[in-house]
Structures are given as structure tokens and as C-alpha cells.
Amino acid sequence: MTLTASIIIPVRNKIEFTAKCLSSIAAHPPQVSHEIIIVDNASDDGTQEFLEEKQIRGELSFIRNDPPNNFAVSCNQGAQLASGEYLVFLNNDTEAFPGWLDEMVDAAQRYSRVGAVGAKLLYPDETIQHAGVVFHYFKRLKICGPYHIFRKFPRNAPAVNQEREFQCVTGACLLTPKVVFDEMGGFDARFVNCFEDVDYCLRLGEAGYRVIYTPKAELIHYEGQTPGRNDNVQHSSVVFGERWRGKIRADELTYLEPEGFMVLEDEGNQLSIHPGPEMRQWWKMINQLVEMKQYRMAVEEMEKLEQIIGGNHREFYELKGRCHLSMGDFRAARMDYARAQTLEPDDPEPQWGLAQVALAEGKGREARRRLERLVAEHPGDRRRSQWQNLLEQIEKADLPMSAGILEQSGKAEFSGEEIKSPQPVHLSLHAEEDRGMD
Image (cartoon, rainbow, N blue to C red):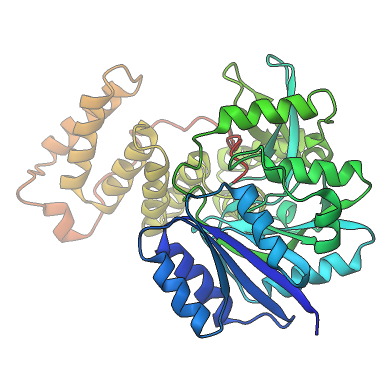
């Protein structure tokens, strides 16, 4: 009986990732019939013995290369042994969620002339690592280059939860019909651990095949764990440029503009995704609500916006902290400012927010410590005199650090009148370009 899928996993050391990857597949076995083929590239960390045991138990088959081969050659080797209708190339630094393979096969069968299907890949914090690959035209370099669109967006953001057609998807988890892979001659072995997936997808498009991204298939991807992963980027970039220069169309705006985003390129050729006009207007409206002291409404609107663009941005947490502080929810305000501080530890705003929370809670010792740190670390800040005045007020209120009078009373002695009205917060969101195509 013909198997539906052959899962091909190239590995080189990192036995701990290989073990987790295989365990995640076994924990929720795909419903479609499948086999697992491991291509081991001269691992010397116990991987060979580990795989031999698994093979004896009939859980997988494996090939050993010594000396090691690169990703493209390893995948081609696995494909030669495969008996599945579909080949699924999978990095060993992944962990599969239930239903991942069934969803990829389903997507391949629902569309005509499918050449490849890619999955939604998540970082361990469940933000997006891969939700499709797009191309940007770099004005200074005068070339089109690929990057992972919507990188670091939240897992549930609407932009990453639409089944779409792309020019490319990542080879970290890529399904392709075996007959198509054979027709295309497999991955180009001239690429060394990068760009072979992009090249393969572009060749599929040239031949009239479609490349589909399905968000229904989800996996964790730790990214970039293979030793020597980036040793040959320059070589592979040259090979890629020779083949595709002048033939690739920039397509990022096709996906960004309908979702309300725009892309900017800086002088160092780094890309960042920013809110488009509609989202900037939304953020302006939130600031206006704060100015009108409609704090609860502002928080509600921020939570809606956060679902679209994610909350890993200092501006979000600072403004939420400001609102919660004004609403008297000191616990929430403290959490907001602390989160903002983890995102940008050197920025004075979160520290200032935490000092205000401490004052409002009557925690004089903590307030003094934070204000002293602000005065010492940010001597040029326009609010320095304000911080010094507050320190003097704490001293006059007889709040020695050793006594902790306000901490014991649990009542806030600080009126808050000394704090100047906050200025509107400007939103600056970005997701750095990922050229690795891992």
C-alpha cells in the first residue's frame, strides 16, 4: 500500500532537539499513513546510537553520511528512499502540534497544481517565526530579497491565520508531492544550508505550480540550531543572485496593505513593518481617549489592537500602565510597566512608571530607590528636576529607607499632583528582516 507521506528530517548533532521532534510527532500520530526518514550527517553526540535503536523498533529508518552533507543533498537523499505520495521536509529543531501533517496534506489536496505547502511556525513564546515568505526590493542594493513576513506577530493575529498563496514558504517544514519533486530535480545541491527552499519554490512557480501557506498546521521552531548553519550564506547568496536576479517580483505589499501595514527600509538595508494610516489613526484615537481620561475605554481599544499586531512593544505596556495607574489598579499597572522594562531595559519610561506605582501604593523605600536610579542614570532627562523634587518630598515626609513606614501602612500618601500630564505616545512597531530562510 502506498503511504501518504514521507517525513524527511536531516540532522547533525543536537540529539535533544531530534528526540523532542520525534516525541511530538509520536504523541499525536497523524491520521494519514506516513513514514519517518532521518538523514544523519556525521553526528557524534549519540545521535547515531539513538537512531539505530529507533530503527530496530520500527519507528523510523535512517541514513548516515560521513563526511556530512548539506541540507539540500540530505533532503534529496531522503527523497530517493521515500515511498510516500508527499514528501515532508522537516527541521529537527521543531515540535509538532496535533493535526499538523493532516492539515498540510488536506491543503495539498484541496488546491489544483500544488507544488508546495508551508506551515505556521512559532517561536517558543508562540509568536510567528514563519507565516509565508515575501520579497522586498532593496533600493540601495537594487535587488529583490526574501524575508519572513509577519515575523514576531502573535499566533492568533488575523494576518497570519489566512490560508494564502505565496511565491515561497520555508523549507523548515515543507510538503511537496513526490512526483513534482522528482520532476523539478529536487533541491539544488549548490546551495549550502540556505536559499535552497526559496529557489525550489520559485522554480515551482516558474513551472506553473502553486505554493500554499496553511495556518492550520502549527509547529514550534527553535530556528538556526544546526551547527555551521550560516557558514556559507555568502556563497549561496551568489548562487541565488546568478539564477534569480531580475526575475523576482516584489510582492510584500500584496499582503501588508490589506492588513493595514507598511514596510520601511533603513540605511543598513534592514526592514521593519509599521502600522499603516488606518492603524496609526486607531492609535491616535487611543491616545485621545487617554487625554480625555477615558482610561477603561483606552485599555479596551488597546487590547483589540494588540490582537492584530501583538503586544511585544514598549509603547503598549507603558500606555496601559498609565491607564491602570490612573484607574487605581496598581497591580495591573506594575505588571504593565515591568513588561515594558523587560522589552527596553535602558529606557527611563518604565522605571518612571514603576516609581509612580510605588508612590501611589505608599511604598516609599521602593519609590526612593527607583527615583535615585533615574536621577543617576538619566542626568540629561528633562524630568530630572521633577524626580529630584519628589525625592525631597519623600525625605520631608520622613520616609527613611530603613523604616518602610508607607509599606507598612499600605496607604498612599502621594497625591500624584506633582506628576505632569503625559504626552501622547507614538507607536513604533517593527519586525526585523529574517534573511536566513531557516
